[in-house]
Amino acid sequence: MAIAARAKPSLPEWFYPANLVTELRVLAVPAILVAIWSLHFAWALIVFVVAAVSDGFDGWLARRLDQHSVLGAYLDPLADKSLLIALFIALAVTGESPWALTILVFTRDACILVAAAILYVRTKFRDFRPIWWGKASTTAELATVGVALLDALTGNVVVHDIEIFGWVSVTFFTLVSGILYSFESAARYRAQRA
Image (cartoon, rainbow, N blue to C red; front, side, top):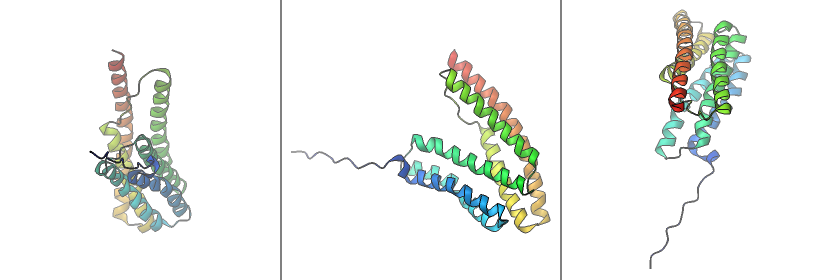
């Protein structure tokens, strides 16, 4: 007589190891803000580096443990954007980054978000996958805010020059990714309607 296999108890999605890492990254945001506003740039840089490294680790963990989840799919980009938004504002407030660039990045993200929300509500279109240029923009933003924190900490001329190059790169990638994402989303929408 065969014995029925016992099903493993499943964890709620909140407790998947990959999602726990992402949730900790969300909690790192206020810690970084407090460190920046109190001018403890060393602590801000350490927490930022840990958060940035965890961004790749949570995806690897989800694949390794085969624990992909709807929560993780929404939480991961939310954690990334929260971290970047907080850092851009904090660095602009403390004078470590240009306000014009902060406004540009927010404007691009707001336009994408509003357009996606309108399409989501008014149509059956749901294909809002990121494009390569958007990922490149996010990578440039993360790298540049990290260098800006390092510059605030050290005041090194070489680091400062790298930071300036970073802000120029972020401007380029923000503009290009915003334009190309608009065209790509329009093409996906037309293809779906056809």
